[in-house]
Length: 254
Image (tube, rainbow, N blue to C red; front, side, top):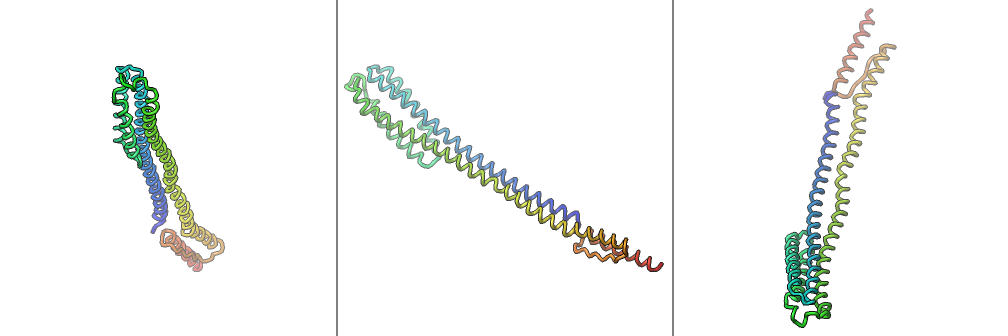
C-alpha cells in the first residue's frame, strides 16, 4: 500500500467517525424536538380547554345567583351560554386525551357536571328555591366547587406532565450529545494511533535514511537501512542502497 493511500485512509476513517457521530446527534436532537413539541402542544391545549371550562362554570354560578334573585331571562341566558361553552371545551378535551389518568379525570368532571347541571336545570324562579341562599350555599355552590375542583385537578395533571417532560428533555439532551463526545474521544485516540503509525512507518524510516546517507557521504559507511513497509519509502531505500553500492564500487575501481 502506497504512502498516499495510507495517509488518505487515515483521514477518511477520521472523517467517517465524525460524520457518523454528527448525523447521530442530529437525529437524536430532531427526534427529541419533535416528540417534546408534540407533547407540549397537546398538554397546552388540554390546559386551555380546562381553563375555559372553569370560566364557563363561574359564569354558570353567576347565572344561578341571578336566577335566585328572580331574574329568569337574564339568568337563563347566561347559564345556557356558559353551558354551551363548557360542553364545547369538555368535548375538545375529551378528544385530546394523551396522558395517563386524563380519561379518568374527564369522566369525573362529566359525572359531577351532570349533577351540578341537574340542580339549575330545574325551575328556580317562582319556586321555594328563589331567594333561598341556604339552598344555594349548601347544595348548588358545593356542587359547583366539586366540578371546579375536578377541572383544576385536570389542569394540575397537565402542568405536572409538562414539567416532567421538561425534565426528561434535559436528560435526553444529555444522552443526545453522548455520540459527539464519544466521537471526539475516539477521534483523539485514533489521532494518537495514527500519529504513532506515521512516525513508525514514515518519519522514522526517513530519519534513518537521512542519517545513513550522511554517514555514507562523510565516512563511506555502507548504506544498510531496511524499511519494513512495502511502499515508496522501501523503494527509495532500495534505490539509495543500489546507488551507494555503485558509488563505492566505482571508487574502489579508481
